[in-house]
Length: 220
Length: 257
Image (cartoon, each protein chain N blue to C red):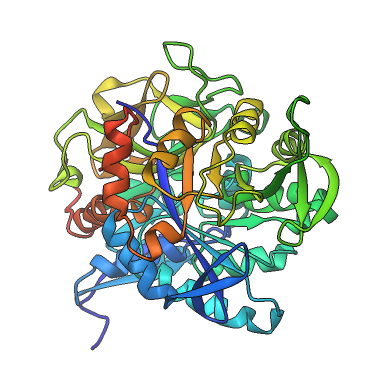
């Protein structure tokens, strides 16, 4: 089959390693008309119908690699015009700033910053809470959104992160989670959606979110 | 509402088959790793751990292919351990689809390897496996030591101090196996589990000795473990993952059901 009529989902590879599970889970839910392409080529990303920005590792390397490979204008262009999904460190890279690695300025697509949970993170009753926040936690929907379709409010997703987001604009918060305190785990504005958890590791609900993304027209 | 405690079935894989040795003697065949992993994924396992216990390194290629096959069908976190000695070993496993790797012996011979691995791949994917045995006599203050070679060789290293050091070097999680309990079905060593869990800020997975579902409950409530790992009680269908989760939830533990 020719790829000409296919809908392309570009998974941005900016050299931060393992994108295997992201690509495999997208392929698992993709129909015959959708092609998943892992790429660092700005031309391929520009031509794609949908763009996914994954995130692995530390924020300084993440932003550093994006800059080194000249991908920042490409990412910003994609966020301006087509369905765009950022995951894990990807969501953090879209904030104004992160406390990680002594402080790193990020892409500033969403107002707000990423902060460290701390080495002595505690629940309201004083119980020690481990950092990283690792495992399955409940995500509360704070807005209706096409990407939440078919996913129950309060469904559990798999997280692994030590920095959390405080968003300045509450109207952009699409989901929250509680770990000692409430924090933002999903942000949405226009054609951009970003999540802190790993859909590719979150079993049926994670696959559902990817399926929703593959069919999303970019309208809130 | 909050973070759920995790149940992690463990696949000990020898020459391409899931096996479970009772004290490393009576090795029983528990099936094809890919099929077993799929079954646990369907049953609601929170993660899967794949431990390559093949003695020779010739079969490493087989392990890479199995990890690929599992990762293509199982969309929950997958940890791979056994024979991880270099950053190249880690890179291969992560590229094959593992989410985390577990480092054991290599950390003892070269603790700096843990730092190097965490800096290169991120702490989130570096699990340090600790095999501990109680060395204090009755009446003495509790003391646990690290052992190598399946629990046969003492190292003289204190288990609690070692786990703190591993976290300082960049371990994102500790997989703690009590070697005097492994395979006995008498339950976790709750003392060492609690001592280590309270000493470090990263999650601790309790392993070694699970014989019934109450042991899993005890591991979390008394041992303060963040996750519990078990093999034979699930492999031979004594209990399903779902039953284990229901029992733990009924005991007041938050679970993903």
